[in-house]
Image 1 (cartoon, helix red, strand yellow):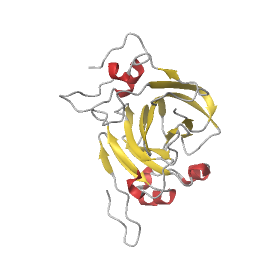
Image 2 (cartoon, rainbow, N blue to C red; image 1 turned 180 degrees about the vertical axis):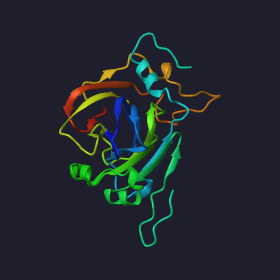
Image 3 (tube, rainbow, N blue to C red; image 1 turned 135 degrees about the vertical axis):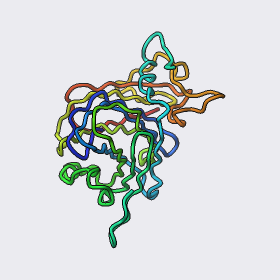
Length: 253
């Protein structure tokens, strides 16, 4: 998904990774972007209710900025290894802001909780009004510094309401608008122990993750913090061009 709290000059090369882990979904997201001001990228999440602020755990991928490059190499031959502010009196407490590598990140449990976030990093009310499907979603907010950048992937684990499906946040909301159709430049990756429902156009990797991706060893801990499974097969789907502006779901087997 590319939902931003304000104007964005350029976004391209979006990569998203997902897999299930019991009642949680693991998600990583990376893109190239240019912004003329500090801005926030906002990911809606189909969270399972009843967990409060514990529904989301952010994952620091500072040590693996090349993660999506390595995932991409699993589909090529030959493979190669890449060597907070005070609360206003009487008002709600501000949301916790966590430093996660290059990002400041917050979890917004519900739309009403955007009022607890710095106004610069809220999703505009007009956009939310055009996206009623997210009325009961939670939101992960990543604050981005102005300029042109491609920094390490953003990542998290969240308690999902759909433990039988994988959610990819691909809906677009740019410049205060959520159009019916949008231009996609997305590469989606997923891991599933027994594959993915054949009705989806998912390409199996030609090389095992363990052959290509840097996942640590006896001398170095896993830089993905368990995000990527060493043994599960990897699949890829590329979405380019103009498509209906919506999120993407996949059915792992």
